[in-house]
Length: 401
Image (cartoon, rainbow, N blue to C red; front, side):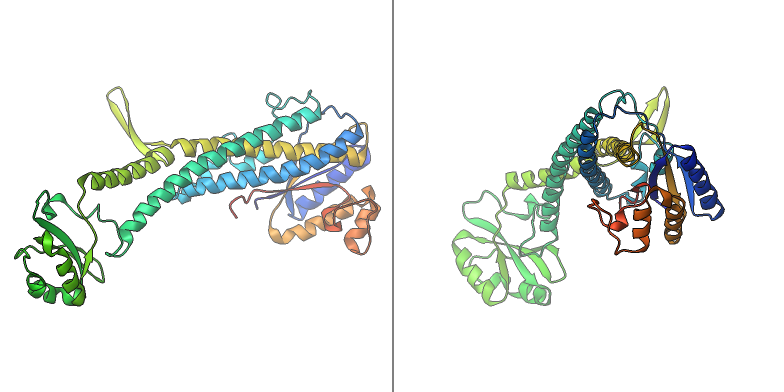
């Protein structure tokens, strides 16, 4: 399972025995894997400051999880052609998320434990806020590129009446630069191809004989060229309409055609080279190593900052355990934190019952309320289902679910 329970109980002799009992029961009953979760000693400050930090950390926890999920989803979107390899880009410090959580060590260099707790929390909040700002900016740029490309691609998939023609027509299909002649494009329904070939020359005076050519077609009809004198354009359009032939308003502009083609090529190139994984050949001496994977800038940034945000999130979980343990169990600081990984979803109810039974003595009122929803816990703002006799926080690694 990708679910973890981070709990704590007082570190006195009685509760250490309770922890041992929990490990024995959960192991024999095959309910969970349990590992110690090391949390450093922080400068506690006043209890009032801890109450404020508890609330702030709760909000920061929710924000961090949301940011991680958004970053992971961005990885999915950018890796649209290789979605099966998304998980290998969602790592923390180069290892899979489960390994990072189960082998968690506090990063003293990045978040010094000797600093006041308020400063540590502030550092985490600023780091996550910066990641979110950058994520919004980078994904906005990517989405704009993607939308522009999709808009051009959509135009190429529309009907002959509306689709772009820059990828279809060529200079050779038109009479250009003539003072008297002009080439028109006419949409002809498929059942009317023969009729068109027989009648187009007689739809108006001054139509150039044998000047029609099928340029492209879709399931509904075909796009034909026809060359005639400029002065009979209106008459030709009228007669064509009467015969259910539609003259497409299009005049060949070489500069515009070139601009549109280059725009499509540029967008495709930017999307592939700047934002997605590509392969290059690396040369070392006389040897060539093909298919070396090179990630685009956005994917590289997402991978690095997903890791940074996830690491920050687990540090926030550790801080929440510390603060809640001090508030719950008092001073001096003395508690033991343990990480439980339930073996399967169906065993979580039984695991909860075991924990509530073993640690019932920590809060008899809370333990009773778990059995009787009508019992209220004085001064507790949470619903009874969120409160247990022991400190408890949930970690869900199903970030793409």
